[in-house]
Length: 250
Length: 321
Image (cartoon, rainbow over the protein chains, first blue to last red):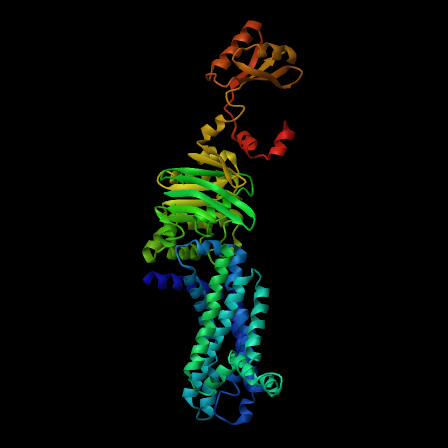
């Protein structure tokens, strides 16, 4: 058991060091923070709203922001291993494939969490200007972390499918975009009003969306159903990653 | 240490490895020979557990690679074809990573890295990124990774590929030294390497084992083995050939080449002739005829000739006759 964690951590550590070995990590973080600021203060009308909350101006944009940034951070996870041929090296080490999958996932997730943590000035700003509900902000951050994890797990899966990072990026953007749209109000409302689509169908499809589950977390509510959704949205693609890697070797 | 039984692997309808069985014990260096695409790499990938066999059984140190992969993999050091390495790491970081996955931490890790860096001459590039290494250094870095845990079993897929002659020599020496107390399998298509480093060689062609023996045994299969070559000064080729053809223990005599001053001829032995008899007969004839002999020696047989005669497709064999 100790070995399992040691190996997972060794792989995660290598991956993290890999991020910071090139300027990519720094470029990513800077762009991430700039976009976050732009969305919050310009598009989100943070000041004009006059309310001490981060839900509408800040967390609201995360599903859209992550749509491109998370696949960009995770696209190399497996495709790079395949391109370099190091996959053969890694999988002939005395480790299980799961240790590698989890280790790599954790590394990228930690990286995204670090980028998210660097948005702390926005929290300082809102608490300087007003008296926000800190519980709601924490819940929002928690939801945002889970959201990033779900996108990342999907990227891990698409990354294992190909040795080309660009293809991996595009595939995961498409899948994540679908997960947004199928529960996004501007899309679901006209569909629900259409006579020829039964309402239960729209609602079932919408329940697969990250939007329906992230919205309540933005407002500070942690529902066990949302938690289960996000955990399975992380777990299932990771499981698929394992299946794909197994298929590659057969 | 390694036991391979009735191993087969097909990719779709293409059979890459077809019913191969062999075993390697501690203290043996097994050379894996064969033309490109013969199934060498596929076999090695199955032994190391990277791809599962279609049928057959592989055990390493008594552990089945499919049923008990972790303890089996612990015993193996593996250098994959083309020596892959993480390009974004330094040599030191890469070796450290390999060491940790092999269960070596802290002081043990440092000691292991130090040992392999010395063995593979990597001091000069230790803190350089793998990206910036020349092919020879990158190859040796990956090789160092395979021996970092001093494994009992080494599987090396073309360990000297892309190295310069000096580096090849070093790696061969290293393999021979380590072969004293390990079970080593290495693949190559350089035949001199087999003679230099192997205690046993297997020739594999189109997925099957076509020859298995010590390099000396394989050489005996050569048409050339035991033949006597002679260089005669100032005689006509035809006379030399006729006289040599009269040797009773010779199968046939042939002219290899001739120029204005001398004739190179060769006498092939009959199947059961004793080594040395034929050379003596040739010497006797030359003495009787008063030939001026410039050179006389018994051929050893050449591995490349054996290799060619065994692995050439039948159609090509017909043509070359």
